[in-house]
Amino acid sequence: MTNVNPHKATGLRRLINALGYSLSGLRLAWKDEAAFRQEVILAIILVPVAFMMPVDEIQRVLLVGSVMLVLVVEMINSAIEAVVDRVSLDIHPLAKKAKDMGSAAVLLALANAILIWIMILWPLR
Figure 1 (cartoon, helix red, strand yellow):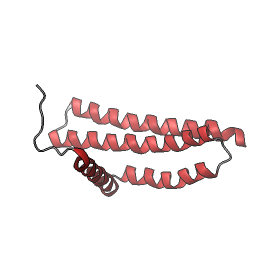
Figure 2: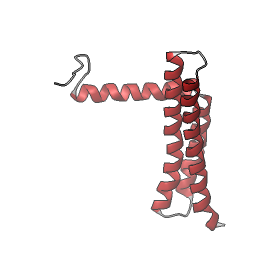
Figure 3: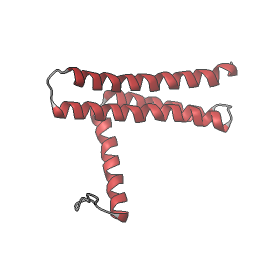
């Protein structure tokens, strides 16, 4: 027996709803998260630069993908922080662990992007 949510839309309505929820999430991240805004501005600069660089398609995908990954991980980190804060604003070791690990994931995504950009662009000098 499966648990079916009678309030959950199906078919095209589900896709339309999902798009609306996604756009709402992007708007909220832009409005409430300074780090996300900074990373979006960086992406607005770096993605066109990646298309102007004399690199092959695989390298271009790596350049753009690494920047997009930072945005994805930042969104997940913000979601973790929101859920932890929703559960309780009390200081708790598990809350700290969740928030610190989310932050570390962003740091790793940023380090990954920096490393990819350096490895691809360094030989062009």
